[in-house]
Every structure is written in C-alpha cells, then in structure tokens.
Length: 105
Image 1 (tube, rainbow, N blue to C red):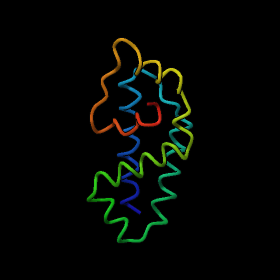
Image 2 (cartoon, rainbow, N blue to C red):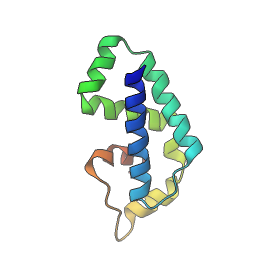
Image 3 (cartoon, rainbow, N blue to C red):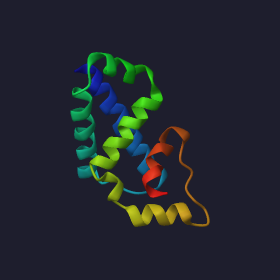
Image 4 (cartoon, helix red, strand yellow):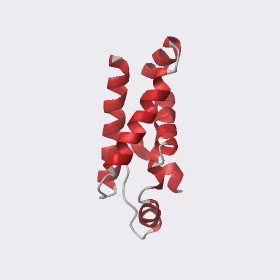
C-alpha cells in the first residue's frame, strides 16, 4: 500500500501545480475523486504492473491522465481552461504536467 500512497501524493502534486500554473483554484472535491479513481485502478493491477508504474514515467502519466478523465475532473473549469489556452498569452505549463492539457485541446 505504501507505493499507492507515493503515487497519490505525486498525482496530487501534479494536479495542484497544474491548476496553480493556470492561476485557478483547484476543484478540491473533484481532485479527491480523481485520486480515489487512480487508487482504485492501481490496486487492481498485478504486482508486476505496479512495479512497472514505478519505473515508467510515461505509463504513470497515462494512468494519472486516465484518472483525471474518468473522474470527470477534466470537465471542471473546461471553458475557462480552453479559453486560457487559446488566449493571446497562454499560460506556461511545465512539461511534466502537460499531459493534463490533452482533454482541453
């Protein structure tokens, strides 16, 4: 179980940094739902799959992205975020959080 907690802390950090870079208040209830969604999916993985998540950053981001979408978090602030991205000075999103932009593009 400690591995899932490490990933949850990392995912929470990604979400908070993502919303901070957009200068938006994170929708906390929806963030908790995304974290719960990730934890549920992670627990159903075999030990080998969980070990792979630890070492494969792309796979981990894919799982984070799936939880982001499945939880409905990508629907919160959708219009605002899409508008920011299309605006004259789009926000700068760090490379490690850009996977969260996909639903808005």
